[in-house]
Image (cartoon, rainbow, N blue to C red; front, side, top):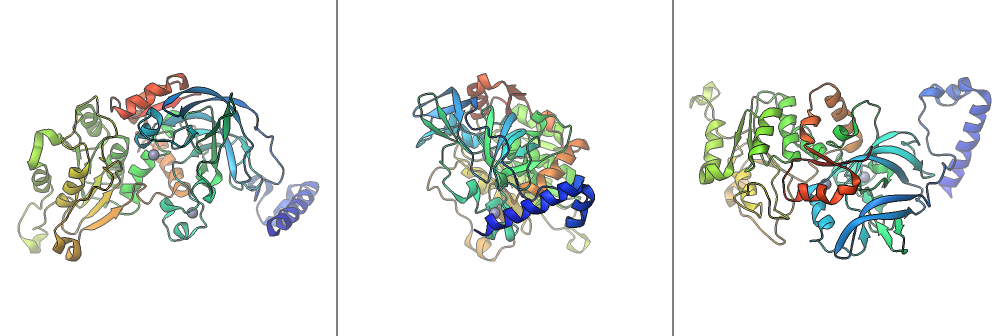
Length: 439
Ligand SMILES: [Zn+2]
Ligand SMILES: [Zn+2]
């Protein structure tokens, strides 16, 4: 009732402002009319409901490109015409059929595109806006958002049913998949959508909407890397390579990247690592080697010496969802990397863990005295404290300024017709970042 009344009042004010011209709008709000963002969508934008579009759909035990019909959107939702979307490794299990799904679904964690419809209560996004649809929500109003942890926004999927249908197949089968980027249209809640005003290409922007944002946040948010620091990054997928770049941008002196895949180590060196190590070649010496590399040049404690191990460790390995068709790491469960990350971190350093995919119920152990009484700072969470609405805008500026090399990370692009190959390239680690490029 309240929102209906306030909407009506807003309509009256805006109609009056429109009738009186821009000067009146300035009087009403203190902001010139041209610069005003709409406080809410006061008129129904053209509905895209009923539009036919193609999407890669996992249904029962198979996945294929389907012709779909868009269902009407709810008041807080946005419809985006997709330009590009990066494949997130986490979504490969759904897309390629190893994870159980309750209903037909468009897999994906966001994308990049242009808005073609907004729901009645949408405030920040307008039709025609180019937007990054983030992998994560930031409503700005829930308990966690208000406590600076938008990466744990409680209003994911609008706070409602994450499996609510957004489209239907020709036979009437309902299809879900909020923010699923592997389709010509994306339906997302406004809290995931960030308007961007840039000439950066969609493929480059796609390096940011999900894992790239997390990799950068891992070096800038929960444990900001300090200039001159020593940093170790375990895992050089698109997330780890974004963390390598974040460490470089923050001014780290030494950046040690670790990955079993040669092509990923080479890319790590290209985008900012000062050393790249193969965990298979290093074996049990990996921890000690990195600790020694990141040790003080003197034992004289009152001369700044006596420490050992990197100041910051970013762990981005995780369990294998599929057997890699590239060089296989020393531990498919990803647990060894978690243990090593903890061990090699300096006694007062910061450890950011971002990985997923460990075996269900798996545990790791730490020395009790260190866990209880040590001073290593552990920052868990696979979104690394990212705040999409704030961070994506500055990450876009880092691409524009030539500081974040998104082009080098986008190692393979695929048209929508080859979506399966894109998921396979990500799942089998035969490329760094697979991108669906539609426009
Ligand atoms: Zn993701
Ligand atoms: Zn929230």
